[in-house]
Image (spheres, rainbow, N blue to C red):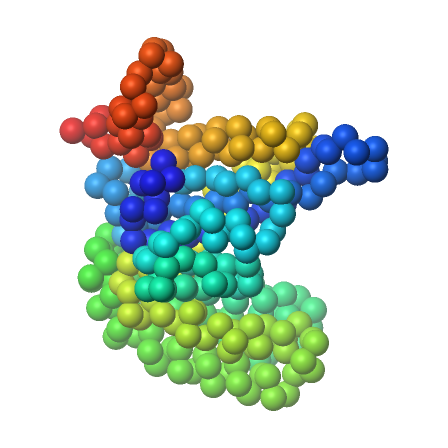
Length: 289
C-alpha cells in the first residue's frame, strides 16, 4: 500500500498525537504521533461522490515522535506533489523535484480565529470572505462535475484577481496588527507560505485544502476519547496497519466486511509476490471491472 501511494504523483499528509503507555512508572503516557499519507487523485475506481476529486489509498505511519525524520523516511525520494499544513517537519523531505504545497483551509482558519478574538476585526473578516470566494470556484467545479482541466480553466479565469486582493489585504493587516495578535499571526502565516498556498495555479490536480487528509484523522481523534492510549509502542505499527486498510476501504467506497471476507481466508498461504493484488486499491479496481 505504501508503494502504491508513493507511485502516485500527489500525496496529502497530516499527523495527529496519540498516547502510548511506556510502563516507565512516570504515571503519564508518552505522546507519539500517527502520520497519514493519502492519494487524493484520480484512481479510475468509481465512487458515489459528485466531485472532481477521486480518492486513492491511504497509509498510516506510527512514530514515537513528531520529528521530520518520520516523513523523510516514509517519502524517501518522492518527486511528486506533497500537500500539508505549515508544520516545519515536512521541510527537507522528498526528492529534489518534489513540489511542496500548503493548505488554504489552514490559513483561512487563522483569520476565523482572529475574528472570534475580535468581532470588530473587519480586515480579517474581509480575508475570510476572499478565501471563501476561492473555495467557491472549486465548489462550482464539483457541482458541475468538471475534470481537472476544466476546473483549472475556471481557476485561471477567477483566482488570480482574488489572490492579488488577498495578498494586498494580508500585507496591509500585517502592517497594522500586533505581530503576536491572532490577526498578526494569521497575516504572517499567509505571507510566509504564499508561494506554497498559491502553487495550485500551476498544478490543476492540486486541491485548495487538505480536508481529505484531516477527515482521515477523524477516527483517531474520536477514538482517543474511548480507548485513551495504545498499550505499548510495539502496538503502534499494528494499529497503523489496521487504520490504513479501514480508511482506504472507506475512501474507495468498499464495504470493509466484504473486503476482509474476500481477502483474509487463505492469506497466510499466499505468495508474498501476490500481495500487491490484494490491497484495497487493487481490489477496488478488480471489482469495478
